[in-house]
Length: 436
Image (tube, rainbow, N blue to C red; front, side, top):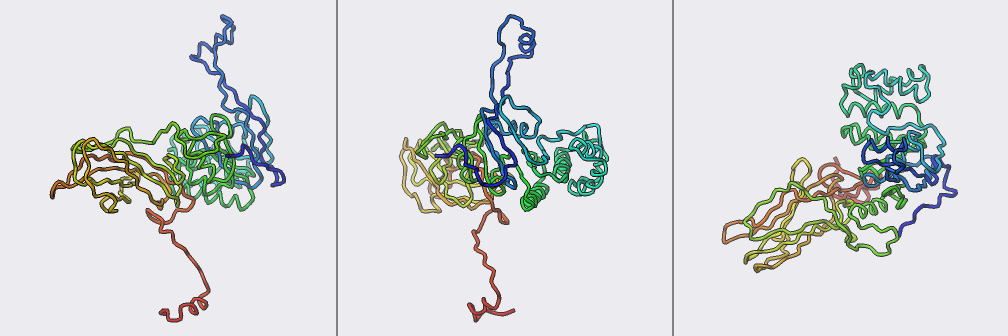
């Protein structure tokens, strides 16, 4: 069972306090209903009430990096906009202690007709800086953005990547005490993202406060001290990244219950399957079902690197077959086959099957792939004499996200243990080691 809120007393100064914040929206079926209700025509209520936030409480300490995760529509962006003053709460209070710099939406606060330099001055002025102060920061902003001569072009000609480069460069070079970022980094290329996260680390060392919303669970796991999990406008939990990511996975597949005492019970599962799946085969077997469970036996499409997980497939046979082979393989999103195995290689099943039989097959292993997105393919094959036959094969059938806070070089992690010792001490341990 997870606690709704942590007790924060005596754990550092509070940079952001959110107290019982609610945000209500009136939803209308069409714009005319809004006008009719405003003018009092018919005396009928034309709207429906929607609460984007339902009494949210948060306390973020100075110097923390805090993540906010949740499904689309859970209220993540809404709470950030209220914290930064872009939106007003319907009820509740927000207290912020420190200068905020926010990167909420792509190009927010930019005038599309202005060029990059003009927008830097526009944003700096809106944040309360004088022209001289902006001039002092301009070289650092342009160096970080690294968009070359495009800074002299209207921003309406920018790509989404150039937008976020310039916007983030402005946000982090105005010496904020609190940095708020909402998904914007997912737009930039991988090198720029690495540059931004390096800046996050610098900010942490300087004691600055960072709050960011992201669907990138690997970044949440690596950089955050604490994580808030939002769902349908309510906080389901707050705590260490691993625990909250685990809870988020259960939310994604409909298995989370706020006061649950037991784990692993099956709920309404929505696997991330390919809607345009490619399949072929002789039809002597059919793959009926396929999914993943994590180390707790919970059905999921997000696996934490270093933990054990299981790939499941269920197969029905329409013919007598001597020794069917069950297979699965992983590809990256670029289509490179990374790894895979089958029941023959593993010497796990060498029996014949009868028509009408259904077999449940599991592949259990430790997740050693790097953090990222992967596709799983499935197959049922076999030999008819010397002829290899495909009974049923599904290409790129299932999507899985690997969550990692440490990515090594290449496709997988060799789980290396590294030690650094004084050379003289090492020579004593290995006296006959060859010397260069």
